[in-house]
Every structure is written in structure tokens, then in C-alpha cells.
Length: 64
View 1 (cartoon, rainbow, N blue to C red):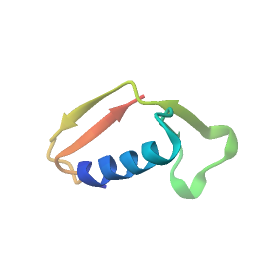
View 2: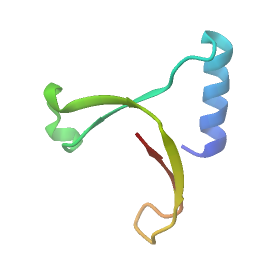
View 3: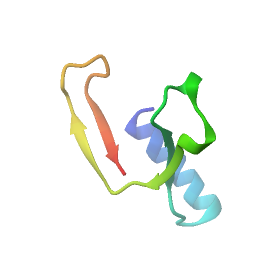
View 4: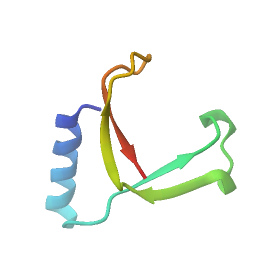
């Protein structure tokens, strides 16, 4: 998802539901190995732009 797409989705959500908390759900295990006890939810604390020549390329990383 690009920044433009993310902003658009967030603006639509804010318009419909108000300025609510945004959280992210994650796991330390690969998607095909997920187990409920391994799943966690957190809010975004800050972000950083990365460009480390990995397969992911230039991107924004959200830190929880």
C-alpha cells in the first residue's frame, strides 16, 4: 500500500467513525504457522523511512 492509498483509507475511516485509535496485529511466526497465543496487537509509536537495498526497497516502517 502506498502512502497515498493509506491516507485515503484513513481519511474515509475517520469521516465514518471519527478520530479513533489505529492498531496493527502481528505475529512472530510466518503466516502459515500462526497460532492464537503468538498474535499481538499494538499501536504505532513512530515511523522511519528505510532504503536498505533489501527486496522490500524504499519504504516506511512503522514502529510499535
